[in-house]
Amino acid sequence: RESQNVEDELTEIKASIGGEQGNVGFRALGERRLRRVLIAGIGLQILGQLTGVNAVVFYAPTIFKGAGLGDSSAILATVGMGAINIVATFIGMALVDKIGRTRLLASGSFLMTIFLAGLAIDLAIGGQGTTSAIIGLICVFGYIAAVASTLNVVVFIIASELYPLSVRGTAMSLTIGVNWTMSFIVSLTFLSLFETFGGPGTFGVYALTSAALGIFALKVIPETKGKTLEEIERDYAS
Image 1 (cartoon, rainbow, N blue to C red):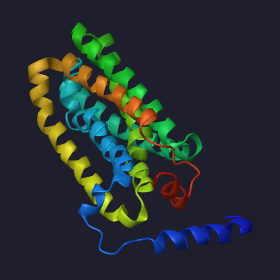
Image 2 (image 1 turned 90 degrees about the vertical axis):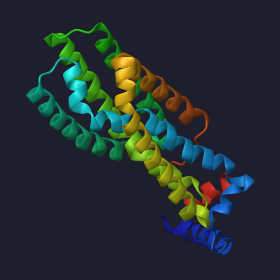
Image 3 (image 1 turned 135 degrees about the horizontal axis):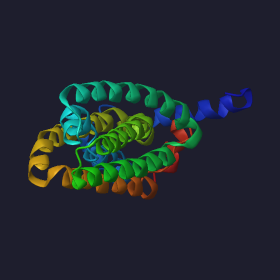
Image 4 (image 1 turned 60 degrees about the vertical axis):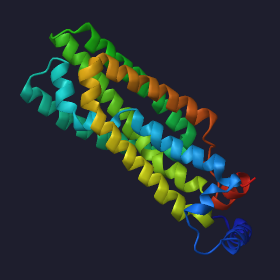
């Protein structure tokens, strides 16, 4: 920090710590003042998982085969998907403090919607030729790049910055528990959805959820870019 800002920020930190309560449990999360930030943090985990990201990762070979690739090509495409995931994550890390958490998440969600809808349409057409396989690859790779550079970058940053210091540990444990519970549910139900509604129906649902996540980000999640934790807590405490 610049030297002229240090004393004011130290005062804010001391005031925040001074107001912290000891031995805060889950009961404290029921306070009315925490309602908005809990809805934002936990809602992000639920909608983020319902976009189907883990289902796409876990069942990528099955998806690629359904898009017209052979067994060996499907495995190679899955490896390529992992490489894209890594590269896109670094891109998201470079953008998150420039664009802002909410704008990055919203833009990524709408990109995810486009790619998932494209994949659903490609599977609905039912082509097994080279063109269909290429379109399927582009849609899956684009979806993974959008997820890795946006949702995966901010999913825990947003929650940890929004929660007040006094309940941050308890609230984050609940948030992470919800995240992994939803991951389990989505992974457990993917094959059943795929068998019942087919690829077009399954990825159509994920596309709608991605669109809902973008709207949720813009309407419900407050922007925390450029603010100290103490400023965020003060702004959203009332």
